[in-house]
Image (cartoon, rainbow, N blue to C red; front, side, top):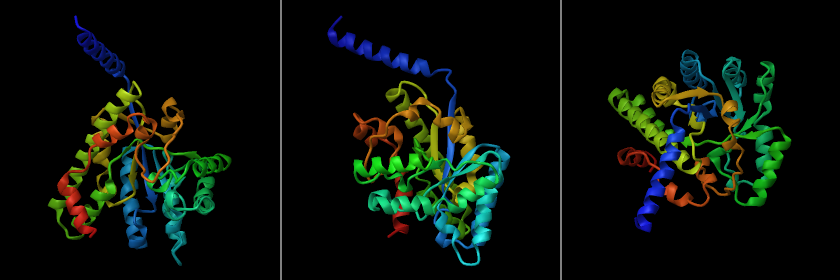
Length: 317
C-alpha cells in the first residue's frame, strides 16, 4: 500500500469518526429576532407596527417556543406614541418564553462609530427595555451588535467588551443568518401589490435558502468543531416572519431541531471560545472562530438565488 493510499484511508477514517460522533446527538437552535419594534420602523405607522407584532406574537404563542427579541429604542420615541410603542415591548416581555435584549439605541455600526459614542448607544438603548423587563422580573442580559460589526481595531473592541462586562451584558452571537432583509423587501412589495403568487415565491425561496444555510453550517460545525453544536439563528422582526414563522419553525423541526432559549444555547462550551475577529463585516461566529480557513469557508457559503438578488438590486437602485 502506497503512502498516498494510506493518507487517503486515514482521511476517510477521520471523517467517519467525526460524522459518526454526531449521529444520535440532539440538534438544537435558539431563535433571535433583531430590530424591535420592527425592521425599518421609520417607514411604519404605529398601527402597522402593532399589526406586525400582533401577528408574529400570535404565531409564537401557538408555537410555544422561546425567542429573544433585540430592541432599538429609538423607534419608541415618537411624540404622542411612546406609550403605545412601549406596549409592544411589554407584550413581548409578558410572555413567559420571550425576552428582550439591547441592540443599541439607533442601530449604528461599531466599525463607523467612536468608542464613547457607541457606549452611549448602549446606555440610551436600555432605559425603557430595562424598566419593562424589571416589571416582569426578567434580566436585561444580552447585547447584540448592529450589523454584527466587531469594531475597527482590537483596542476599541477589547475596551467595549470590558464595558459590556461591567454593565452585566453578554454578547449575543449568531451562527446562521439567512439574509431575510433581502427577501422581506421583495415580500413587502408583492404584498402591497396584492400579488399572492409572488409572495409565495419569495417566501418559499427564503425558506429554501434558510434550509441550505443550516445544511452548510451543520457540516461546517462537524468539520471545524468536531460535533454538532447548538446553533443561534438571527432573523428580524418584519412582515415576512410575521406571516411565515410557523413554516420557518416547521422547517427547523423537519431538520431535527428542538427550539431552545438563547440562555440554554449559550451554556455550550463552543460559545466560551474567544472571538478574535475585528472588522466591518458581520458574518457568522462559525467563521470568526475558524481563523485558519476562514476565507475558504466564506467563499463556499451559499448566497440567495440569482433572481432574488437581481430583483432586490433593482428595487434598491
